[in-house]
Length: 200
Image (cartoon, one colour):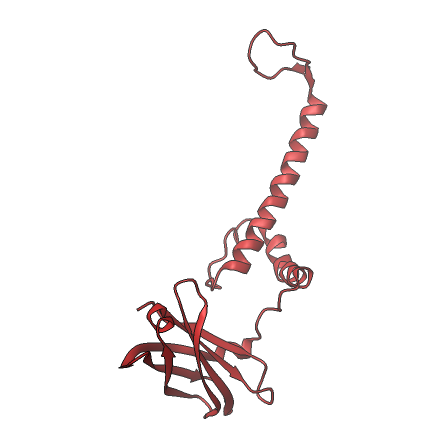
């Protein structure tokens, strides 16, 4: 049996056999499966969080093997692209939950920015860490930096730190955001907790 596809009239069209059509369909199905894998990998690596109770296609019996292979595929993608591995579960209990800043003083040629950072330690042991507050302009470039070193937070505790930074004008006028980084000391972990405030 021969099948022909519909094209504009007045063209010489070669007939297509069923075997050729099946080969094309098989190739397209393989391309589609590859694209779906890549799409799900991108979604999983770019998403901040996804509820564990909801996983797309979990009811589909063909999706289960693909979902089981995702953690390994992610790890391989991280290694292949030189990305750092996914954070450890322990790092989920260590985070910055609030960061604020405002201009508190204007001195001729300078502005003083006050800042406040709140950190939560959900781990069952105390942590030693350093804080760095980076004041950013609208292009994301750092125009000033404030640091607090060797801060200690108790086990399963929350802590609020305050500080200020004097930034010269005109760079101070360009500050639109603050990016706060909390680095745990190596005797605790090499984890990094960071957060950004909303623009002023």
